[in-house]
Image (cartoon, rainbow, N blue to C red; front, side, top):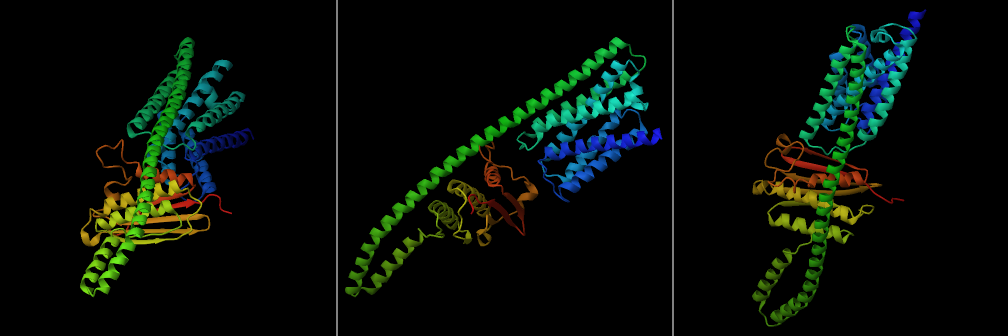
Length: 442
C-alpha cells in the first residue's frame, strides 16, 4: 500500500514540476504557439517533460550531467511549438535547467543539514524527509521561475549574437559547477565543515545567475531604447519629408492652375490665327509637362497621397512598372504611421526593383480594408532570391548601425496596432504583407 501511495505521490510531483517548467517556457515566449494551440502545447510539454524526468529517476539517483537532457527536451519543444528567436530558445531552457539543478541541490542540502542525515537519504528513501524535500524543492522552483518569468515573459529580444553567447556560457558554466559541487557533497568522505562551505558556494552561484539575468534584462531594455530612439528619429525625418512633399504638391497645383489660364489663352490665339500645327506642338509640349507631375493615387488622405505619389513618381522615373489598387477607407490608423509604413515598404521595393533588368522591373501596391482590419501588400521584382542569402532581411549597407531600421519600423507599427507582418518570395517576386487592426472602430 505504501509503495502505491509513494508511486502516486512521485508521479504527481513530477507532473506538477513538469507543468511549472512548461508554463515558464511558454510564458517566456509570450504564449505564442506555432502549431496545435495553447492547451495542446501545455499538455505535450507537461507530459513529455514528466516522462523524461521519470525515466532519468529510474536510471540514477542524481541526474548530474544527464540533466542536460532536460534542456535538450525543451529546446526541441520550443523550436517545434513556440514562436521566437532561435538564441532565446537556447537561453530559456538553459536558464530553466540551472533553476532545476540549483533549487534541487540547495533544498536537498539544506534539509539534510537540518535533519542531520545523509543527503542521499532524501533522494532515495520514502519517508517524511523525502516528502518535505519534494514540497520545499517544488515550492522553491515555483518561486524562482515566477521571479524569472517577470524578466523573460513578453520581452522583445534586442541582444546581439555575441551577448547571447556570453549569457549562455555563464549558464552552462554555472550548471557544471553546481553539478561538481553537489557530487562532492554527496561523497560520504566530505567533512561537514567543507559541506557547509560548498553549500554556501552553491547559493552564491544561484545569486550570481540572478544578477546575470537582471543585467541581461537591463541590457535588453537599453538596446530597445536605443533602437526606439533611432526609429523615432527616422519617423521624424519621414514626417518632414512628407510635409515637404505636400507643400511642394500644393505649390505645384497653384502654379498649374495659374499656368493653365496662360496655356488656354495661347491656344486660343494660335487657333484663331490658323496656326494649327503650332497649336498641336504647343499642346504636346504641355501634355509632356503634365505627365511629369502625374498623380497616381488620390485617396481621402493628403499625407498618404503625398507619399504615394512621390514614391511612385520616383519609381516611374526609374522605369519601374507600377500596379496600384488602394481603397479610400483607410481610417483608424494615424497618418504618420501610415506614411512611415508605406514609405519604408516602397523604399525597399524601389531599391530592389531598380536592380532588375528594365523589362522585368515591377512594383505592385494593394491596400484593402475589411471591417477592423487594414491589409497592405507590396510586391516587387527581384534579380535574385533575397531570403536565400538574407533570410532575416538584415541591412547590407556599410553603416549598419544607421541603416536596417526599415523592417524594424514596419514591425514596430504592426505591433502598435496589434497586427502582424510577413514576407516571402514567389518566382523572383518579393512580397511583404502587413495587417493592422484599426483604432476607434465603432
